[in-house]
Image (cartoon, rainbow, N blue to C red; front, side):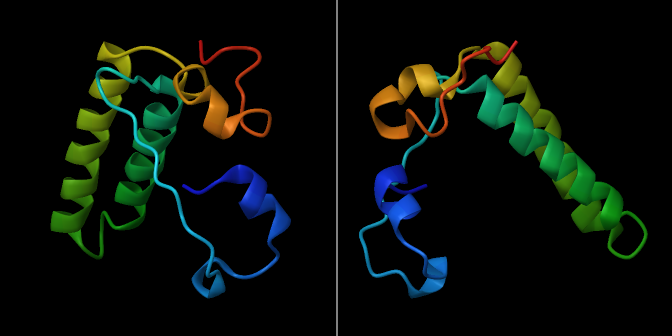
Length: 98
């Protein structure tokens, strides 16, 4: 999230930044399998952390990870292809998400 040129030029903590924070999203019309699958992996890993101390939260994380991964699999495409103007050259996928 954010303009990469402005973000890379700023050395403040995100919570101290006063520059506008542009928001980008992926959806079925604007796929981002790479971002969605990475998010699913983070959610799945977090579910393991909370498995014993908060099983209901761990279960929510796991269910959400499965749904996010299914989205990534159903709507394939690299987010840098869809958001090229906003994310390149910093976050381009040169080798592809596959």
